[in-house]
Image (cartoon, rainbow, N blue to C red; front, top):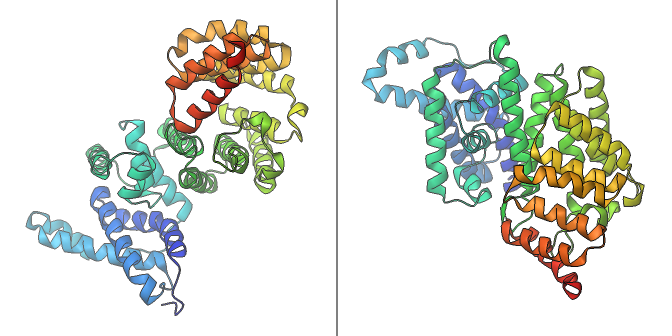
Length: 408
């Protein structure tokens, strides 16, 4: 054991980094994902209790594997119906070294199965691969711990019922499963960077975890350019996090942010990863979104933003991955590159696909304000404020409306 008493944050970091490798080893040895995940979670709880007083072991991962394996063996021995399985496991050698990136990627694929809803896949990924406790995940998504516990239990049951052995998907399934896994990682990042509801604008622990897991996926799949594209998109977007709120915690829009607060190292890494991803193969939607983020990040001032380039990138993105949000953002880019009236004309086409979504009203308000229609912008800002579940966004939209109230 390490004689120095570790800090709580240090232990949490060790546990999060070690949990996927430990779980992969236990699943590989015992073949039961649901029970193995419970056993590793219990081992992590033991570690959180013991390591502050006793110090960290030389191999945190090995410690977790050993403790979780003992718990699994105890469960097997307690179940007479599984006696044959116990004899099989007892004859196996102890788990050897594991390839961290490959095994973590296998866990991500397992947790992001197409049979699971996005909410269930996110929760299971954060617990099984991210090493977060049920309580931490519940707090991040503002739901009771019992509700999150049931969600995770159902997800584990679904995974177990598929009967899929631990490992990477078959080559013919890899592309579809990778798309599903990247989507879950992006959803985790988005919820962390711009929380969909609640009093906080962001939850850095979620966006940070999404970046960490995407890095690992990139190590395991260096030949997949869209993994690099997603990592670049996350880095280039998260680089602005410190400037997104003021000293009172209020939202600051992109064009008003203090760009000196942006993370220059993250922007440089994001640009490098994006360049490598684009050079690696066909350009996909995550690479295009990362290129748009780079166009914003590489502008020293808001007025230096190359909106013509951004508009062209949104045109490509709409062909590769069409959707209402892409069309909405293209309307904004059109307004910035060709004038507010052009953007408003495109917005008319988009609105039926986003009925009741606060963002379409917020965008119209912004474009109407650019066009000089104060009363119209006031009404749209007010409408958008009533539709969002994010309190920081609601306050921002209300302030924008109030600023225009004199001309309403």
